[in-house]
Image (cartoon, rainbow, N blue to C red):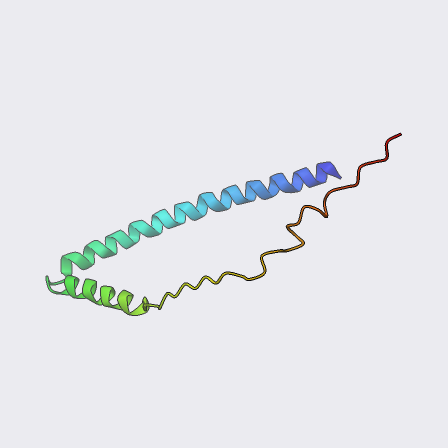
Amino acid sequence: MAFIAMTVVFVALILLYFCFKYVGKYYIWKGAGIKKKKKALLDESPEDVIPAIALAIYFYNEQIHDEEATILTIQKVAKTYSPWSSKIYGLRKHPKNW
């Protein structure tokens, strides 16, 4: 039983290793393609397009992040005693002297 459990764990670890290895290579390959597309876009676009895109993205992000009113209220509780924090319930009676 222990051998089967160890085998299952090691097989799962090996599968995860290969998954992470090839997923990483895929994203590196995909990132290289995106960099080529960005470079081509920057080479072909006029000078006014890039700042306009950056400004549109900035305004979009500002619109998404709405301001919330932060009100912090701390009220003192009138009853501070709680049997959960009382130590007298945890004390044991002394055993009788022999």
